[in-house]
Length: 224
Image 1 (cartoon, rainbow, N blue to C red):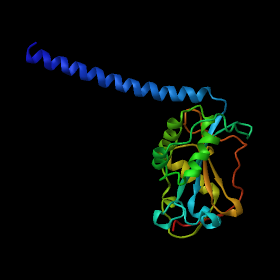
Image 2 (cartoon, rainbow, N blue to C red):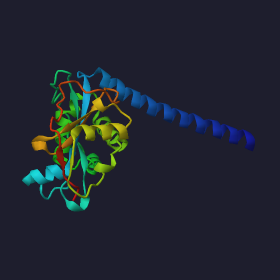
Image 3 (cartoon, one colour):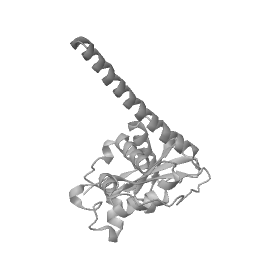
Image 4 (cartoon, helix red, strand yellow):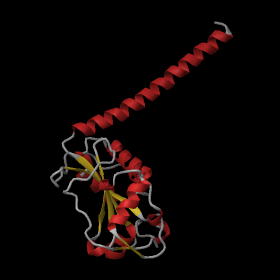
């Protein structure tokens, strides 16, 4: 074989390998979506907790990674929960091995706590129709893709805000329906944002069974 033919053959082989790799990734992603679509639930609820509120009102949380001031955490992932439209949810759908330490370490920057990670997988992730790695991969992709309004990146002082205003800011920042977002506000203090997602992990209007904050104004604590 002459040099020109060898070079051409090599290019064809490389292109074939790369094409196959891309196809495999697409099939894997499509397979994960199909698995979720067949699972027994109606939609996902992504819950993002406001770390400053949690740390200020939960004494046992002091000293944790989430409440370590040097980490300056704001919104962190509480969980991605399969839900039924009627307000109930499936839980603990299978017995599986614990989340391995390398995956725990990978998730800690956005889901700060090994106990939380293990709990969320055992209680909610096993009902998602996704493999362990696909479940946490979906959480990471959703968190990284969520655009935080400027007010919630690293606020330096306590503010008062209307829940409807908070919802509108998140919806605008993410080019999504306002109905896809809910605010949690126990004792009229901002504690979490909840996001309703279809089985395809795209924004959808929340069912009426997802609670809304009814306070006219709520306190938003700063990131320390």
